[in-house]
Length: 278
Image 1 (tube, rainbow, N blue to C red):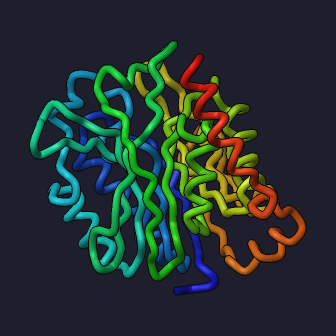
Image 2 (image 1 turned 90 degrees about the vertical axis):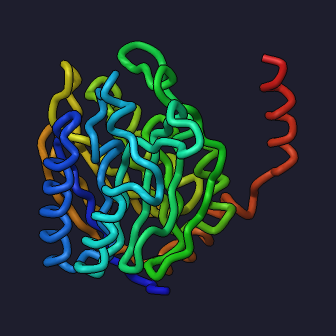
């Protein structure tokens, strides 16, 4: 397992429903990132299909890991010798009406794992529960480039997910997102908070561009366990950024901010009980 890795964030604008175009865009960004030495390239939420798919959602869905797009991304990962995280619509092979908003991780040897978005915003301009089913698992993937946890967009508002990923051993948490401009300040604060409170590297890859009146603000960033922003993308437009992270930095920060040492697990039991009574 590598101690240092180069993480690239590909802040792209997608075409709704055009997987062929979006795959070409992702491939181009992967090639550019690899030229700069990237070990991992992270794309935004639903990068494969676009975000506002509505009734196209069902026909754009693919099974994981046997979908054609995953096979194609796996071939790219093998050819470029790089790990890739991207968002897509997943269908359940046993029930085609059961869909998930999913993050997929592939590497040079193919499919590694997936994460299904737990918290589905269904308020104001968001309508994810109309199409998607919530996920239930918080896997941590042990790879050649470290132990990686995944979350998607609105999940970052709920600290229990990233806490659990960190307790399970995550060294890097990738948050893929399609956050509109009205949520910019929230995400800038929350991604930093998740890094500090868990003493973990956070890679936040957000969308750029406009879909159905939604302006995605970009601002993708890589955040150190100290909360400092190592690298940040432009606002409101496509960009590709990269930073080198050293996992040993976590040990130094943990000594200075020992949040994991000071955890009080009994409070989680109380939280569960109180939440059930809301």
